[in-house]
Image 1 (cartoon, rainbow, N blue to C red):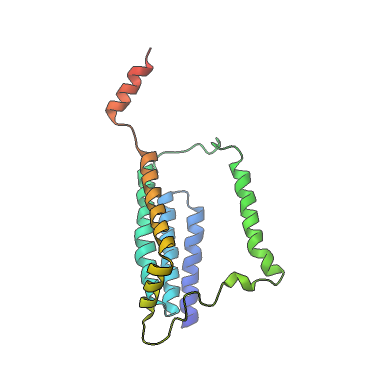
Image 2 (cartoon, rainbow, N blue to C red; image 1 turned 30 degrees about the vertical axis):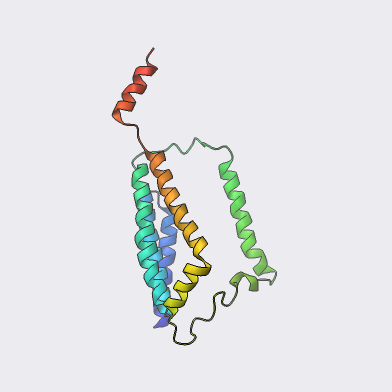
Amino acid sequence: MDWAVFIVAAIAILAGAVGVVTSRNPVHAALNLVLTLFGVAVLFVAQQAHFLAVVQVIVYAGAIVVLFLFVIMLLGVDQSENLEVEPLAGQRPAAVGIGIAALAALLLPILFGKWQWLSGQASVVGPAHTGTDPNVNRLAKALFTRYLLPFEATSVLLVIAVVGAVVLARRPLSSERRAETVTEEP
């Protein structure tokens, strides 16, 4: 039964990930991201990490994807872009180069047998099951003491991203448009 759950979840994750990358419509890409995140939540349940599964569904599939959809709708998905015109010269070759460098950074340690460092430490905060203190309490203590600064920095970055998207997507009011056309006409 464990293999069946793993295989179904893995297929859902891979199908969603491929859908995110290949979808031309950004709304469809966001919905494929939800499929991927639900598949990851199923894998968390299979590993008996129920709290992480709930957080995965509520925070990521719920809040973050809704935030993405809000920004997508705010930016206007109905506007077509000319893909032949490259606004920043050299961005595509730079992206390919960075992608190859990232892939090499992941694969070279594996190829040369130095892959142990990729998994990280066994436990940074401490063992999960010690004493009578539940895992959720240990997680909350670690999150709101030792990792409070990264946690808050992430929330600030998300707020900045939303405010930036609103500013970029803001269309001028009709009175501002009329004022611009009046000043442009000589």
